[in-house]
Image (cartoon, rainbow, N blue to C red; front, side, top):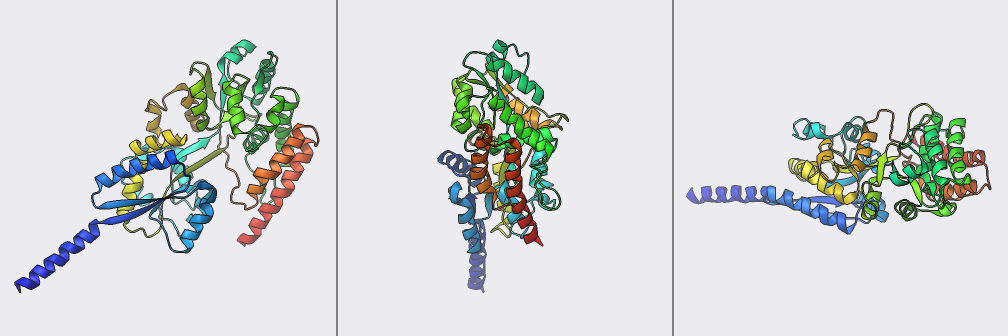
Length: 420
């Protein structure tokens, strides 16, 4: 009997040890050496607080992440927690692949600290919290204080009319220009923001799938941007500028305005005094609204993790104030926690511009239709070619709008048909 009891106790102890020693898998998809290093540091904090638990970090290169993760998922190699881009949320959230985090949020001590935008975006799919956004990539307007003062511009522009007038005045200075136009790769954001703000809506499609790009409001917005360039309010060679070019154009003092995400601050802050520039809300259109483009990413729990409570604790560590702030300092995103604005890194006049924009009810973040498989070609090929033609006067704003509308209408109607 004694030996039976001893054997039973040993079995219980062994079972307890097996339960305690748990390995969680965490997939990182927007990968860089700096991000991975930061992630390891936050994960180490989690492991120290949960003895017996190990986190295996799987880092996928971003340019191959979508295909690689889909392959992993199809093969049953499913992680417990993953970094979820906004463009993947609907795909995995609608097929039962993700856990709803709402039950955990009810008792989490930092739920009240999550911004309204974070909760709104995290609940996009069926009203369930399939993701906790860790931060936002939101466009706002950088402005050069010295150039505005030299040009006689009293304050940063609040409207599109103000922006055009300020750009005109700065461009009258020798060798200076108003706007750092991104006419080359990655330039779609500018066209969408000016188009939507002039149109007074971010709706890109009608109910039947017809694109709105050829509607008068959108065309007027496209023409506005073309006129800025053709009137000499942007550098002539900006028709070919990409990210590095526009950021350099701003910190070198070539142009007074730049629309960009917070990640541009890294290069700008290294080269400009914080007293010489500011960040403000994107200029508003005729109806008093503006539509800055936004992207976001966050943490999701995959369905049926190895240990649901531990998986949540890992997300809570990543998303809590210490983890969230440390992570976003390296990623260049705006933190999802309202308390982050008190951190010295974010409590600057420059970051205040983005927090003010997020809180402005008339600044509605605009999301791209990345659910369309044709969107990549549209963004990286068709838009660049046709927008450069329009900037150079080879086609009219109406021609530009029609080509975009025709292409996107076909893509959206195909997507709608496949949903039936």
